[in-house]
Length: 420
Image 1 (spheres, rainbow, N blue to C red):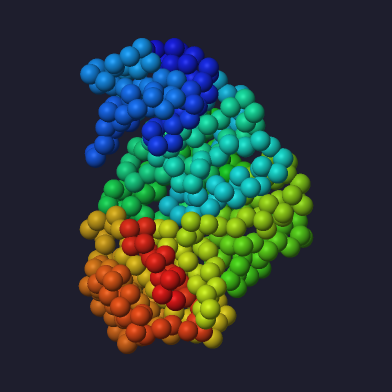
Image 2 (cartoon, rainbow, N blue to C red):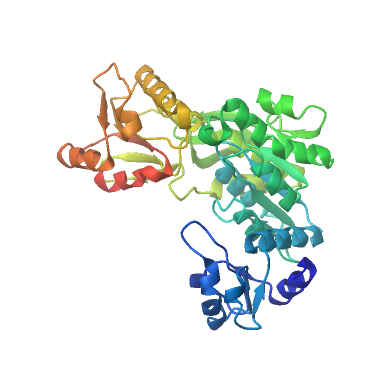
């Protein structure tokens, strides 16, 4: 089936699903496949639950007229999304980066939605499936699209850019994330800059942080919109305070590193003519969720929960910010960082050395990578697994302390909250 024919069905039905557990009436069901599942097997179930059509790529599952056979379901989904995006007469902003993508995307959406009907990536659905689904969730009422792009290998951002065809781009930063896939920090910079390459070759615009030398160097010769000069950092204790056009803004975001994320949202809002008073309201109303820079007050402790993900760059930034926090007692709980490949041992040791420089009362390191590091102070206590930490905390409670909790998603360190 040609993409034009598939698009005609999409326009008629207007909905796309990839999971039979969430099937909506008259939707188009795309039977995606993965290492441990085959969506083709659920095509008939999707039709039975009300899907208008099911798209499959294995001939034995085409058992009725409502089931459409294509060469590759994922490829068809991506081609359809690109075709749809190119029919939309709306600006699309794409963003990527090593850290802060989702928070920045949420802030941009909060600001722009005060004036425009926006459609933005839901959560962190930012990969080769999430980006097409985001584009296909845009409709005639959408006035600005905001697409987050994630990657852990070279050429992924290039591919996602071709699908999304953005008019504007922003890269939050270049950090030591996914080194296993990118090979080195230089590999990270090159891969993330694929967004710049796309924008440059299509004469599109880019937003940049003028204090980030890598961003400035990589966008030389491009039409760049730099951060608003009137944005001034005030403090982060723990929430980031700043001013914009002499208007004070108190965010619900912790850590000085979030200043750049907020600055990007303000700059983009200003570019799209959002009044300063609406920008202020949007920033101040945004509250992070999903274990991202959340403040949780328990009976005896204040927990800074930043356990959604971690890499060397984001962990160092979190530690630096926490070291500046005003508190009588400070406790740090760090979990292993994943996808670092051959750099894993060195990067975990670097974090230990960073910890030793700071004024923390006690530091708990959790996971095999941290367990194998060398520490030179008795304020660091190491555990091979979360269960070992759990047993310790059940017998040694933490009270009257500020806690920083950070680790990679696989460590699920949000479980600490119940123990503190």
